[in-house]
Length: 313
Image 1 (cartoon, helix red, strand yellow):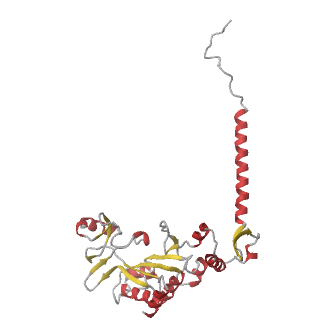
Image 2 (image 1 turned 90 degrees about the vertical axis):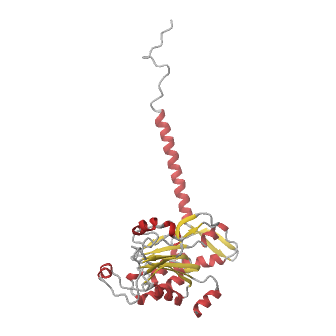
Image 3 (image 1 turned 30 degrees about the vertical axis):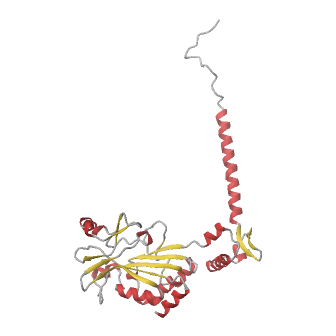
């Protein structure tokens, strides 16, 4: 006799209630083994470092205490790095890593930009050479950048600061800095006192300081001529050192720039076919610009001849 199939009679037996638990336990066991293997591999990696020997580059086990190997301080690491960069036979990947440079944003006040390391005064006091030595190797920095920082630093300390920049920059590296636009003989006003401004260097004074320190191709990217009451801009790349409080990027100037875009000198693509939104050389009336800065940039010589010429300048 064949019984009819109804919805009350299941067509197949339900899965055993223990089966899902067994599968789950197998997954947990696999994850646990994977974690253990990863941890052991990581510890082995941390205990291995590259050493220079007479036969070339080799990897060997590192003692539990780094102090035993004398690599406990940054200066000693920098010396090791410099020697390794001169060593022949270094694997290409490691060699590329050793020659990578860093870009430093000073006085960031919490701002972070892609490709830049941000430092505040509590970590990097640019008037203290010892802070540079704690953070950087000599010659490994591609760029130092700051926006409205040096008006808070006594003018007498500026020369030592730019000497530190010069020392830690790689050959061909650069400094880009911006400060409020001050005219000659500026006297501190109430706003200066409120914001802690103590240094009122003009654009020409900043250029002269950088040239005397050894920088070459020093250029004013934005500056104000108080005699003619005009503001001057030139072409500069935002990604090479962003300055928000500038003619082009300050939001307070955007309405004016948009309404006068058809009359502005702007940059073009490499082939000259497509205009960009970047300003080229322009001269504005001081009354039309609501926010501006003094922006100056200079380079560390890339050759020995350039360095000698800079010192003789």
